[in-house]
Image (cartoon, rainbow, N blue to C red; front, top):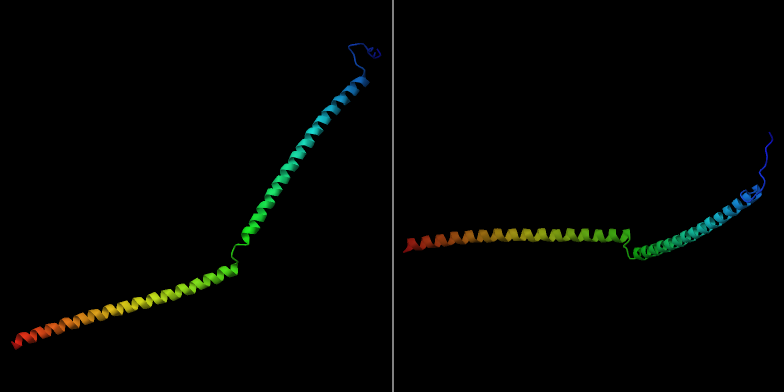
Length: 129
């Protein structure tokens, strides 16, 4: 039995009409999707540009800040100066401590000698009387 094509009526659609409608729907959907993609790309470009501008501003701030930093040579020179100065001050403190110890020893010896001398004078005066 041969295949019979349905006759076009109000309830049926020809293949050409069907394909044309589908192509039109796909075209409309594609246009909407393409518009959404373009909008998304534009937003992404704007965000990327803003981010890059922020990064460039940050780089400039870092450059400006790094100009005020001391160089390695300056820090090493300063460290060496303070190391020497600390050594000099430590030597001076040691000298002062030595002088203080010597002075205390001399005063102790003087006190001892004077005590012995007064004791001798007192004994001599007792025996002389």
